[in-house]
Length: 337
Image (cartoon, rainbow, N blue to C red; front, top):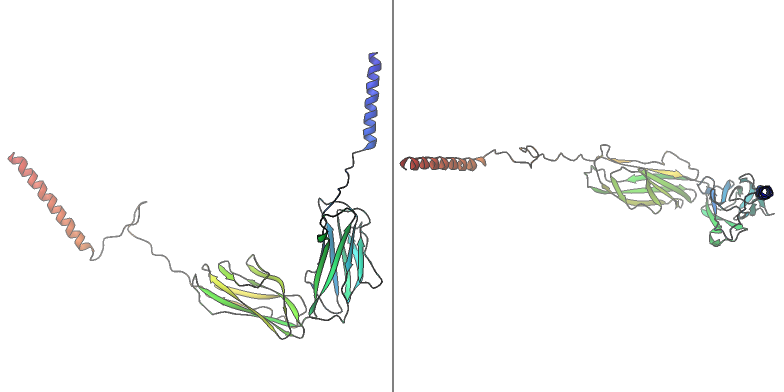
């Protein structure tokens, strides 16, 4: 009887283990919703293009880590004068994008469920596209899992159309020299000699102890440089100027220095005038006077010198004589007693 029970238990155990082996791990149910986003970039991050040139767009959707795997579709709508040339997908299990007959609407799809997908879409810019203004491209994401926040499933990118021209930079400020605590203004000027309206970016080196205020919107201080990432769009023949207020916060043997430079985003006819420089001496602070006559850990004392010592000496002599007289009187009284 015991043997039969043991055989029965063993058979049940083998059956359970076999079922677990063939069934495999349990598969989690897909989420009922997932917040997804789409981003659209210009490959070089310059965001400019010339008539007759090209624009390479980069589309990204999902998360590289921790994302939800699902099928994704992105539709890219190109502006007037821009047409589809070619595309490729990342990772490679995506598929290239497909354009419509007019090559203005481009559809990009994944061929299987992915947590992250990316495409590079190369386009041609017509030679007749007007210069001096922006064109806008739009990307729209569609997912198979419902998205609770569809507003971030649309992205837009502006690209400035320009063939370039001739731009230059200059800086003007009082010649100094400056003391620590001095304040002065410096005026930066960027001139566009034409022939087209064009954008520029700008940066300038800053000394550690040179405090400043009044930079244009979009400028950020990083590692001793003031970077102005936003485009400054200047019409042909015009000058963009701004004044920055500076304060000398500490001494620097190299002086107060500014070296504005243009970060070109379009071809430029003359590269020699894309930098300027300003330098002024900073006066070294004089050494603070050191008290004398002090000793040990106590506070400083003043030496007894000069004419002011005469009254002190007389007072000391008077006290000394008075003390001696008191001692003599005391001794006489003792003897008489």
